[in-house]
Image (cartoon, rainbow, N blue to C red; front, side, top):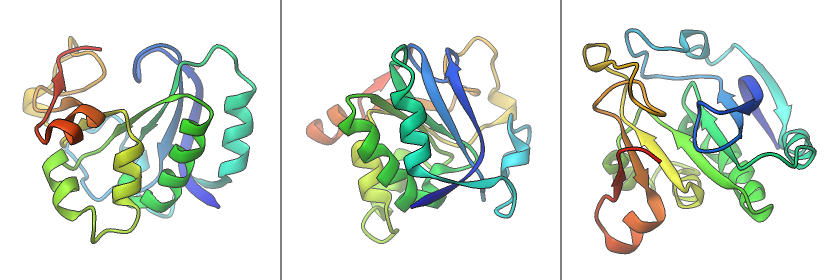
Length: 168
């Protein structure tokens, strides 16, 4: 299986807790004004890469703490990112996903949008919500604007309420 990516950062300390392998999805319908990655919006840009290639790169770095899916919008390619997340979790890594959708929207639509349920269930921490330029802050850890939340998906699903972090 392949995924269309805008790029990959093999070691990052700004896209989640610890040292992260970051996959930037290509394609996003949100088109948030002031987006940090506007080059990821086109669905025709970027390049295709085999998930197996990504997994081999992850396996080759013993320093990694986890993998982050950023964008673009990973949920626009939820089948491929869900498969990637499953393999990443099988290796014992933490998965963090960024999305312009709200957690509530993902939950409401997870059974009608292919791959959403799987990707959501395999995500440990979700940064949700569109970037809002008027709420931008450079002081926020792992997010760009104050409306975005860092959600513990496992606890939120168990407790059936949003369990949110201010910082990880």
